[in-house]
Image 1 (cartoon, rainbow, N blue to C red):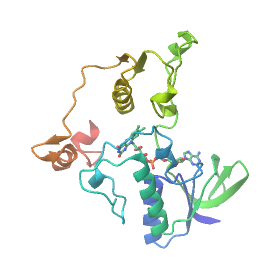
Image 2 (image 1 turned 60 degrees about the vertical axis):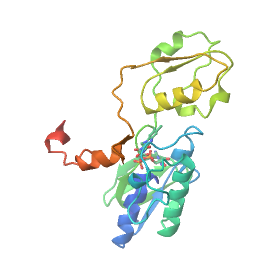
Image 3 (image 1 turned 180 degrees about the vertical axis):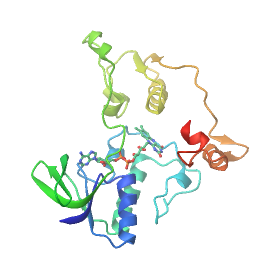
Length: 228
Ligand SMILES: Cc1cc2nc3c(=O)[nH]c(=O)nc-3n(C[C@H](O)[C@H](O)[C@H](O)COP(=O)(O)OP(=O)(O)OC[C@H]3O[C@@H](n4cnc5c(N)ncnc54)[C@H](O)[C@@H]3O)c2cc1C
């Protein structure tokens, strides 16, 4: 019986591990992937964070890069790996949790080839893991190659010819930007075109610096802005 099991070994899980280490607690991180940092590495090749170095530190270990630098996904994965090493965080990889059930004393955490008993379970499995494709995609001709951003790596995966990017969130815009540089095709976009974008730099400071100044990045959930 373990004291704590953390399901998920990325930002949230690793930060929890750090605090449990400081409290001298016995714990284990389990993750479905085969390496630490995989949730970032699985994203597209050219991905860069939209948060600069100074906003990417986990507790206890600074992200080693210049202030204002936007790290690549590989830098993030390497940082996570060095974090695990530095704090000697116990991790069990290749373990996809399929169920957590309450027992008399704690919890039974079940995975494909086994189970772990723990007094406490911390779920740090993250957001954005289940791609959503609008149902109308079935009405599009099979000759047209379709791909969700979750599986996009680079422009070479596309077949020749024009392309349409659907959806204007962070992934949509970054992928649109990349594909648009490919002169061999015309690129269309479907999504919000009237987006209120803010410059990354303003009066010599990053956008994130200003967000911190006005208290936009961390606030109590009961505060006016928190409720909003
Ligand atoms: C395209 C894109 C760009 C982004 N860019 C930025 C950015 O620039 N800056 C920023 O701060 N945030 C960014 N984010 C958001 C950021 O990725 C998330 O906020 C962050 O990853 C959340 O961390 P987490 O530890 O909660 O979860 P995740 O990073 O999602 O990690 C969850 C972990 O849990 C594991 N897991 C999940 N289910 C199971 C299971 N059943 N059993 C075992 N293990 C499981 C996964 O393998 C994974 O390792 C971006 C997100 C996307 C999609």
